[in-house]
Length: 283
Image (tube, rainbow, N blue to C red; front, side):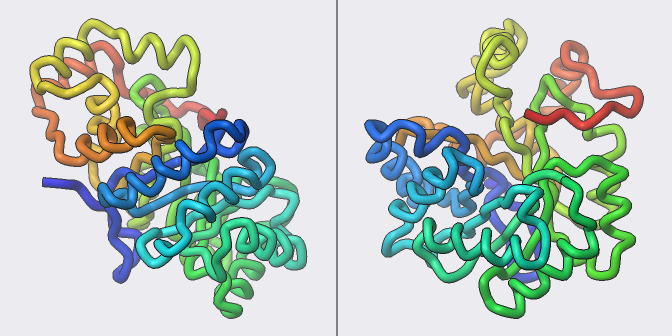
């Protein structure tokens, strides 16, 4: 059965969405990126995550083109720089994102990472954007456990609907304290880079003998195994980037993958869960 993640009483989404980091950087890839996002919607991957930072707004423009005539089928998420977290700057940043995305509202608006603007001011800015109808919900990204506790103590902080953080099999630090705390608050976590960032670490995961063996037993790819592992527990959504139709379809199929306790134990033996608190990984 396909997994879903509940953000609010009226918003439950498939546990795999679509990321857009690195989209919009190469004009020759634009048509393929648009086709991939549209194919993802067709596969039921309704959440699309982007940010004003990605290709300095070009990723948002790619998403906007992909959503022409399809906006009502998507849960659209964007993120703003921490220096745009003040009352006036947040409004202006949101309006720029809406223009690039060719829409009049965002389903969720996230603070990309924490900066120097007081959380109280950012919360007020989000509430104003909600009252104006420009955003429906708000959340944060790259917040560690202390940041979340501080946020929850602020008036209105409990209205935060998600925390987007780095999480994959080779980076399990959030399992020690951040993930349990979010679960206690019924706050879903969005896992970015669920297949690990490009480079040596990603290569090591995709070529790991144990993971290859388990994937072969299940007749799936290692990438699908890694996605299924990330969303194996309630309240966690994976948002991999897939810039081709084939990759999007592969990601979508991972929603139906179930991992046995035996397989999870074998994976834990090679990639052990954290035994102590670790600083939040970020890329």
